[in-house]
Length: 164
Image (cartoon, rainbow, N blue to C red; front, side, top):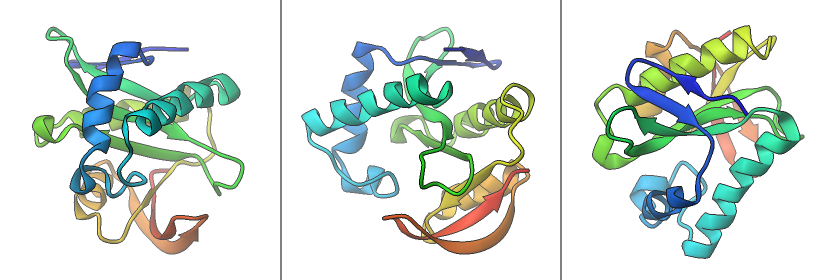
């Protein structure tokens, strides 16, 4: 399971100590409303284990994002493709205490490169809730173009932003 590096970030595999910031993120409805909603500690642990399982089943997935130097967990970014998903998806979340520092853009940009160059994916999209304005702005900043709004399996309407 490959690690990726940017100037400031290490995109790495999950560690047991990541559970504390993972639980914190999913303990507040405002923070996690676009990522499946609140989870108690056990459900957060199961959700984090789901990330590890996706790697084992598909050979890619979401990375834990760590700031190089401090070793601080700053969020989660990666690629998702479950059987009912129409295309490979780029997704991300950054701890609210670390937002507006360019971490999401830096990590997501590296994932786009990885999807194109390493996975040789024919396409990459981000499925974004219509009310998630910050993610829409980031997708555009990353060069994605709004394509259409679709009904995403069990997730409701989502805007499709095409990266390639």
